[in-house]
Image (cartoon, rainbow, N blue to C red):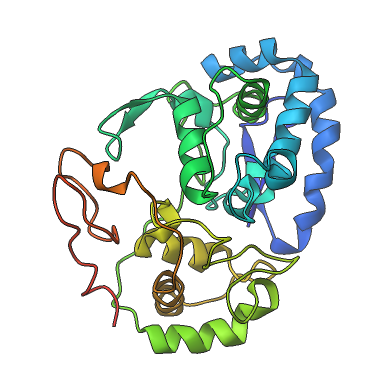
Length: 289
């Protein structure tokens, strides 16, 4: 399912479009021509008005071709749109619509207030297993400009339809069963060894996200898989999604050096797959068989 955005104010979500309309991403250049006519209803909109159309277009390009554009900051073969589908505009696929209106916000993982630049750098260091961008760099400014453009018209609190990933009732997964589903439904895009193809990114190994990434958590990965995979026909059951997520996240992947300092107040979610200094991860062994 995909977001159709109001051409005057992109964050006004009109409807959800069927999977067969994935070509709608081509409409974005037409939408950009109308950006100057939109008056934001939040701080995100005001930020976009000062960004300039060139910055917005370049920011979009950086999200689509992150590794090719910023190879010194990306350690694997993922890009921003590997997780933020349809250029950050797809419902239930961690959309970027409204995100600049929601930041700064408190991050329990950091135990502190995080800016939008902090959050972007989390993705670079964890999901893309790379290095942080300078917060005052042109690259960072342009990426934020694109996100602010998508967020025009969002309410001041930034909450939008289809935000984040849908919550799911946790299920006990079965890794061998997940391996069988993976072989049947996932290898066409991600390869038999999870190393990725031209159609999809690496899911484990040195080119994938590291253990500190949100997708390394069982429940996060299961929801993303359940609502978005396979990309051409999301059709797995809840149980299959948990099985596949457990199988994928049981495979080797890069470490994250700072992981012990995550959730410094001891409030780590139960599916965090590593121990922190504040409290040991709980539920890891019980969540996967």
